[in-house]
Image 1: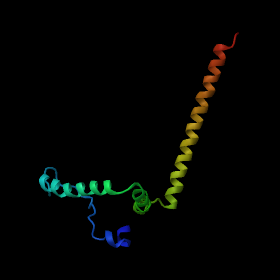
Image 2: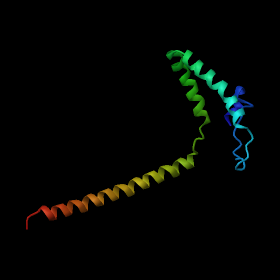
Image 3: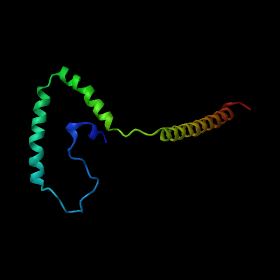
Image 4: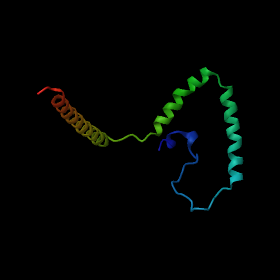
Length: 114
């Protein structure tokens, strides 16, 4: 994916998509808590130390990095999705028009003196 193009991300842990058998754990709760406790504390301290300007400047590159991770639809998928949306809009518009027309006729019959 995009990790091959970014040398500092090569070798980073990526999910394999496989789940463990129920009840079987590869990591104990204590080990997991110990691993995650130190980085969380450091991250909180770093975030407090960053000024507002630094956080704003960091926002744009982080956003670009996240957008590179997005799996964008192909042209064919976009045509299909757009067609589905238009068809749905046409059906709902016809439904609302029908209900509005029937309601108008009903109200006219009830309120018009004979």
